[in-house]
Amino acid sequence: MNYRRGFSIVLMGLLPAIFVFAFLAMSWVRARQGEGGAVPPSQIEKLAVRQPLGARAQARNRGRVVYDHYCQICHGEHGRGNGFNASELNPRPRDFTNAQLWQGTSDERFQYAIARGGPSVGESVLMPAWEHTLTEQQIRDVIVYLRSFAAPAKPQG
Ligand code: HEC
Image 1 (cartoon, rainbow, N blue to C red):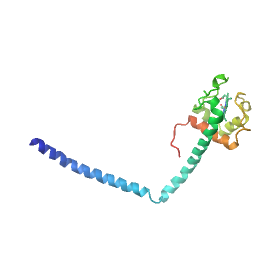
Image 2 (cartoon, rainbow, N blue to C red; image 1 turned 90 degrees about the horizontal axis):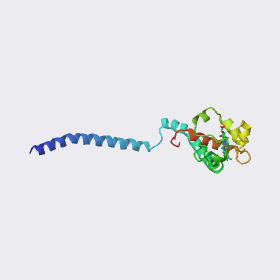
Image 3 (cartoon, helix red, strand yellow; image 1 turned 45 degrees about the horizontal axis):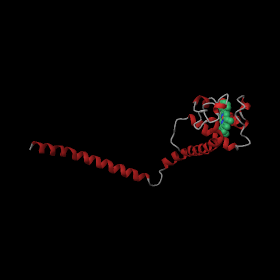
Image 4 (cartoon, rainbow, N blue to C red; image 1 turned 180 degrees about the horizontal axis):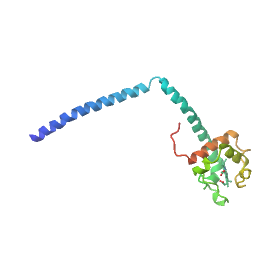
C-alpha cells in the first residue's frame, strides 16, 4: 500500500516538471522557426562582416593546392619543415607552425622571399624562386595557407 502511495506522489511531482519541459521545448522550436524567415536587419550587418572571412577561407584553400604541389616536399605536409627532401637540406626549412615566425614578419616580406628565392632575403639558396612558376595571386594565397599552420583551428567562415 505504502509503496503505491509513494509512487503516485512521485508521479504528481513529475507532472509539473513535464509540463515545464514541454513548454520550453515548444518555445525553442518556435524560436528556431522564426530564424528560417527573412533575415532581420540587425543580422544583415553581421552577415556582411562575415564575408571577408569567407574570402580568406577560399584563399587558404587555393593556397593549400599550391602548397601541396610545390612546397610540401621540403616544408612538410603540415609545415613542420620535415618534408621528404628536408633531411638533405642544410639549413632545414623552418617550422611554419611556430607562431613567432609569423608574428614578426609581414606578408610583403614573405611575398618577396617566395617570389625571389632564399638568397634574396639572406636565406638559403635551397629555397627556390617561384616568380616564374606561380602567379602573384597564388603566392598571396599560399601565404594565407602558410599562416594557418600556426593558427589555432577555426571554424571555416
Ligand atoms: C627544395 C626545397 C624547398 C621547396 C620546394 C620550397 N622551399 Fe621554402 N625554403 C626552403 C629552405 C631550405 C628555406 C630556408 C630555411 C628557412 O628559413 O626556412 C626555405 C624558406 C622559405 C620561407 C622563408 C621563411 C622565413 O624564415 O622567412 C618561406 C616563406 C618559404 N620557404 C615558402 C615556400 C613556399 C611557399 C614554397 C612553395 C611554393 C616553398 N617554400 C618551396 C626549401 C624549400
